[in-house]
Length: 140
Ligand code: TYD
Image (cartoon, rainbow, N blue to C red; front, side):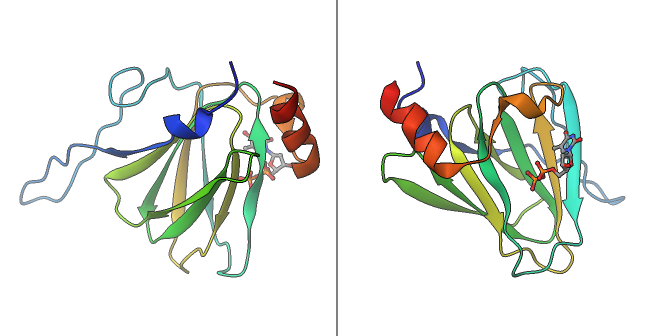
């Protein structure tokens, strides 16, 4: 069931384990986030005017964490609803389920955006055309 996956988007607060040596944040698959982690990648060096993402995924779920700096994520459900989330703390993430459209933008110069994914990379499960995404949502 694809519809209303927007409702599953949520901010996640991870426990900060700090002591005099600094902070430590732990993210365990299927414990701190709702999937087993198969892939990680990170995005840095994007200018503030850059928009990344601009796709939906049929199979992949993601958690995005700005481990340094800040960025924003705009999520759309393809039915006219959208929400914007600010990623601005290393111990806060956003959970993105399958079949939501996402744009990442407003990257600070020092932004390092860590992405945890539930799948190995498969370009065929990416929907990169917004009209196609809307069409698929409508069909469902
Ligand atoms: P892209 O999906 O455009 O990045 P983003 O959604 O984060 O803006 O990916 C950029 C390039 O990297 C593209 O050629 C595909 C490749 N890529 C992989 O090979 N494996 C991956 O896991 C990801 C996310 C991208």
